[in-house]
Image 1: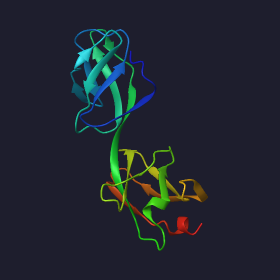
Image 2 (image 1 turned 135 degrees about the vertical axis):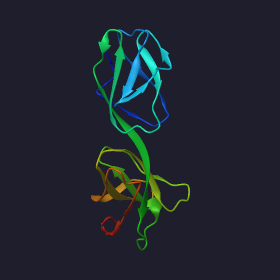
Image 3 (image 1 turned 60 degrees about the vertical axis):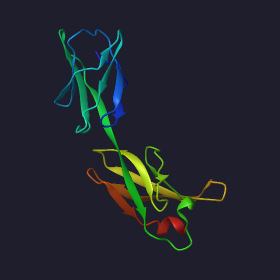
Image 4 (image 1 turned 45 degrees about the vertical axis):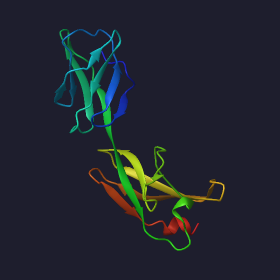
Length: 163
């Protein structure tokens, strides 16, 4: 039986540890319908490498004693958030977050943001302006959406900049 919380976030090719009880030799871990052998098995956990081509879904374990309960998992992906130019507003003055509180960070080029989201969920993006000390000023705006399958999104923050 899997004893993790109701869901976990994973990345492709990541080695993860999952808490469980009643583990036996001969385990097969299923990410949806993709079978994977565990890398190690402890008394109350096992480690497994997340398949590279997996999409969000459920993990379950098959062993000599049968199938386990299912554990929901979400595949993390990073997308680029492009900001349409806004007069008088610097990228450092804007905070972009998901409704769940995941903050966007500046990309390596410094002219866009990246944000980590789940691969199969509609994600709402919120924005607001920061003052010189990094404190939120004005209103929070629903700025845009990232749809499942999107690899980037461009947003216009003019309404955010005016408040």
